[in-house]
Length: 76
Image (cartoon, rainbow, N blue to C red; front, side, top):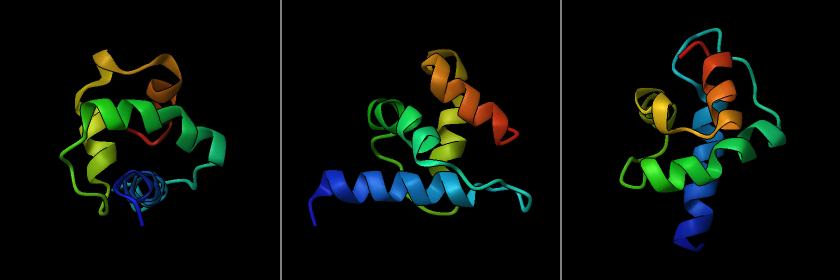
């Protein structure tokens, strides 16, 4: 599996899992909203356990508006 595909799948899993017990499941559209931001801003972050979502939340000021909405919807 390519590194890019692993990153995208990891991002999807991280966004779905979130880090809060009440994290809502993400739609494909919501996951897609953050793929570019995650690749650019969280490239070295290992997927899983909500780490990518946490990384994105720490950089809210640099996020695209669609991704910012997804992160905020997750309570970050």
